Length: 330
Image 1: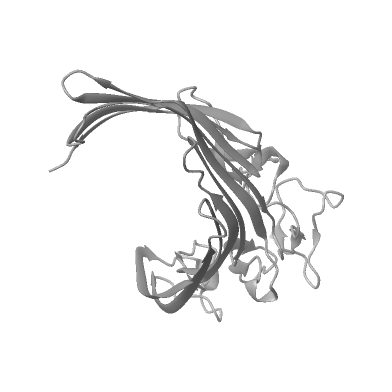
Image 2 (image 1 turned 180 degrees about the vertical axis):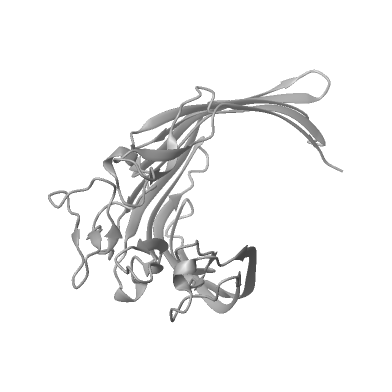
């Protein structure tokens, strides 16, 4: 059994050099003074423990379980002209638990790694509370609560490799993630969402919200899988060549936080490949690396089009990229 901990102290400050210019807030309690420069600071202290228990029932098999806790420090949010206060976000506490079986078959050219993981994450989002007519504001919401002992993120990871002949390795990975909102009953509706589609007034207000509790987390595909070969061979003058390629499959996911149906990105596959020439002593190498060689277009983050009728603006993923890499070691 091993254990440890991480002590974190982090300070942040922001000076936007922007002045507050909302004339509607003059003389109104809670609004910033007209002309005030938007600035703020935040400091946090945290101790994050972790522990791992490992057991070897046989020489080839290792079973382990782990608990790890991490702090992701809260951000500083700059208000816009309609907002009347400066938000200092609370910290995001992340805890990760993992259990799995790792088998290492020595003597045969194969290896595998299987892990079951579960996460509980308290997530921060910004939501515009338009129902506060006299002082519209943005809220920081925690979407799930680790202290409840319920997980909103569970999955399985699998990794394997097989060497049929000398120099050739076939490798693959697969992961299944089931991520969902545990408690998010005041999510912002998407543009054009109707009552029948789940957009209703929040209790005691006129604000329209939707309940996303139990719904999938945005930008969280259930399946990720890769497969491809790696081939290594020697050439004259004490050099060696490595060729590799792989296909990467990503299942469908929502790109927008409000789960607008138009923000849904269907599953897609990308092709990566590379070639590397280097010295046998690894003192230098020259490589050509290609990512998304099929130039597959896909979305990563979507937001409703301002003033639109339901359209979604989406940030595009990385297009085809070819890199030339030169590496030297001394």
